[in-house]
Image 1: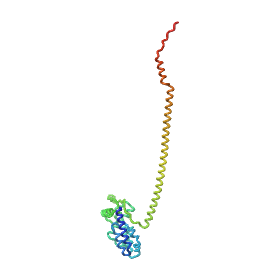
Image 2: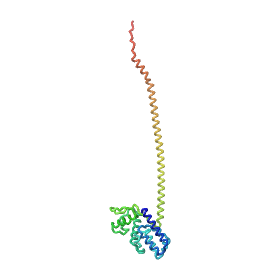
Image 3: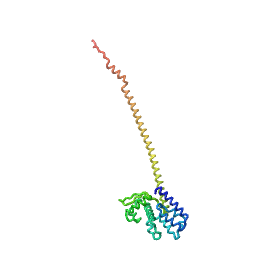
Image 4: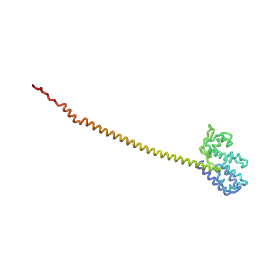
Length: 262
């Protein structure tokens, strides 16, 4: 249900609650009928919780409290099971109760088979069902979904919430508590993994630094060895000037040796 529809529904509820708060007994019946027939109202717990409405219990008009409970928590199937003791519903009330039935079905299953919907809504054919889902549910803004004619199902990613049933709040709190515990455990696991990753990063940095230092040591060692080899070569072969002396000595003319006279 979008924000505009929620705002409109809140305004309708406030108006009906204000009017119902000033009435008692039989004067409440038209307000209950109006609330359960209104095309834009899908929540009834506020009206049901009014003290003067609760006072209808045990009176000749107590069945109208049952009507409110039916629209707050029940379905079309519930009405059929109790039709003998509940006032006859108008066409607008029947339409609304079937809309509410779709919301209830969508609470537990986001893929609703056509066969299930037709049985729960007393619809006799697919065309009638699809017209109802499009015109009275999706266009009304209470559900968003997709009709899959090939698979014969209604996919419902979103459905408006209904009034909480008695005991449902406790179940919801239990579910939320379990979810919170699971989330805390997951968060702890994620934090442990982050710490492990940080430690591994530090270890990697340390190893990289050690490797770089090792490379530098090898470079220094190779450089020192090169200097030593160069000095040794000079000591073995002498300076270039020595070579020049040798060359000069080699090209100097030799004296002719005269034969010795005996």
